[in-house]
Length: 463
Image 1 (cartoon, rainbow, N blue to C red):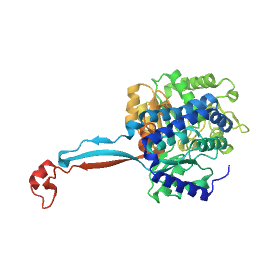
Image 2 (cartoon, rainbow, N blue to C red):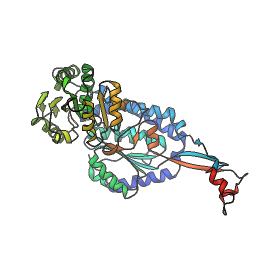
Image 3 (tube, rainbow, N blue to C red):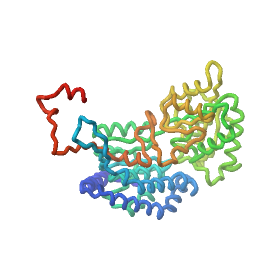
Image 4 (tube, one colour):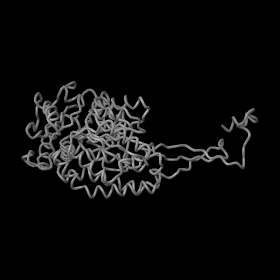
């Protein structure tokens, strides 16, 4: 795919800056109209988006719809229904010291925004932030991933047909294009990707004091206590780990399991993987491939030197990696220090000797960078205790992945796994500035605030 030239990028940004200054995007009626156009475009282009996802990632229509298209559709629907309420001016309580003033919060768009997405969910992770940008009244430049060229081209064509380029535009290219984009002055950069690349984003944004939303990743732990429902946990974990072949930012990355249930879980996990994908997993139309050879080689390398509990088969020609459990890798090994982003699952056994299993699991998690997700299987009260003592972007008790499916709760990272949040109202607010306004009437003008501060002792008591 051809890189968008620097001249073209600068031209698009200048046109969008002029368009935003015209005030057109401020009107609520305009935003609703654009969201409706977006909704209609998603319906019209659904089949082409799904076909592109199959071509680039071997993602079935069902998985493409459930994990990408339906999420964008739900986000658009939510914003159309609630934008009037979210955008409304808020009357805020004013303390006595401000009498006779009234206090308000006004929601205003930030302006010209840049959205950069990765390849693993190339539709959802590019278009979901766009919903928030439109809803809040901004313009947007979208930069999809070059690793999924078919999807990126379809999205470019869809956006070009749906929106004027001076309002929403798509630019294409590699990291050299990213450098050009980062050198420009934006009012917000919304980036989804790795923590390493996010550091480049923040460094570039700092030069212009540009705010950023960073949706990153990390090693999300999956804790399995001895009182967990092992059969059900195995099914949910197998689904979450093999969804998109593990190429999910909130996929469970590694397992901390009580020694008493290790063997039961390994058998249950292997059985559930075959229930989900069949005895010949490589032939399953719902099993996604590694995005490219580099990704295949990296993830396959975790298997070569490991003790395999189940799985382990690979095929470089088709970039296929079988769901694989590996046993007790070293804590400093690559598979335990790098985000796996594939269907390889390291399993570490803990017990109750010396201190409780939960204490050991919590200590293990908090000794590492804060993850994007946290998963606990066992008694709910113990799950809440584990959550209280740890930190993550989000998480589940007795489930995985599903916290992303509710558009009414925020999604985002913390620490090394990101900053800022979006989905639903949080998307609207991510692309907005909450502006405080005080309105003071002219009928009364109390003298105590003016020099020489008469009645100061009385005022001091009030304050």
